[in-house]
Length: 115
Image 1 (cartoon, one colour):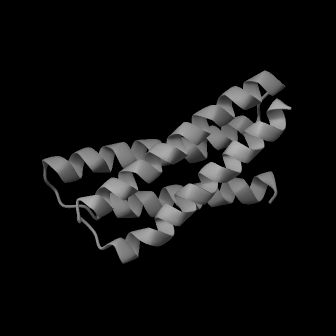
Image 2: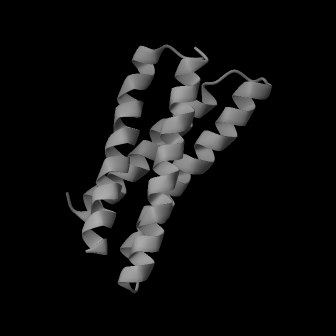
């Protein structure tokens, strides 16, 4: 997968997470999760773009580590939504799979870059 394809994939992930977040009920829990999910999923896309512009290997690895943390946090919030039964799990599974795959891709990239 090219960096441009991965940029598009992370941005699409962010759009999907935002749509999920805004579909939550307007109550204390829904608003909290909404803010958290929007923040971390947006960070995945934005920080991956920053990773592509890293000026050193050390900077690349550091920025990629942020992307890994944020994609895993996105997965956490999606799983939390499922566990709280706020949205049917069948609707969440594709997004959970995408968050898991993105996290795995970035972990593999960091391992390769660290060699």
